[in-house]
Length: 263
Image 1 (cartoon, helix red, strand yellow):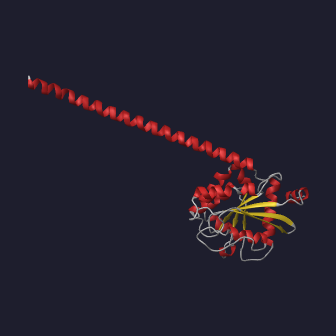
Image 2 (tube, rainbow, N blue to C red; image 1 turned 60 degrees about the vertical axis):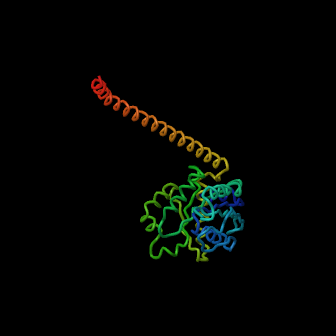
Image 3 (cartoon, rainbow, N blue to C red; image 1 turned 180 degrees about the horizontal axis):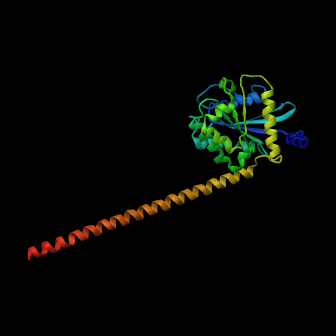
């Protein structure tokens, strides 16, 4: 019996809780609508994020209760980064007792520096533990043309590194397609991931651990900078002292010469 079958036997009525994450404009809300099979989230082409706060919608999908939590986009020009991050953190209590999966939404095309930074920020916010609960979701799969997703990924070293960080877990959505199979396949991948995680979900305790790790890293960096600043000040003091000593060595014979001339 497969891991998915075991998981579904153990928790046939449990909902699957999914959080959508990514930079502004990659199609998070549209992906949520594709998953739910209806226009539950407002979705439009825009430079700023349509979703300003975490938003949860729960529906039955293929006989299973599925909760989707949409989040504000990172690098939204209408939100400072710190504010967006603080709002995104609310997705964990909103998906209580915790999300089974984080979908990191990316569009096929050029994997930009902002895309890479969005993933880095996500891992920084939610910590190392989030890697086992993450799937990269490529939206607008029709834009790949004749390429398959493996060919697209292989052409982008940054994307290869990102996928390695999350155990190469990924899926492709065609947002224009109404085919239910793409949703079925994604839910099966998520169920398999949940089974690998022992049926557990990402918890608020994991988020708190990640926050403590960030605080410790911040203190370490601050101390390191203070130490570097102290070493720099000491180095400058030593250089100034050395220059002063050189000046004294130069001036001493000169003073002796001037004094002998005067007398």
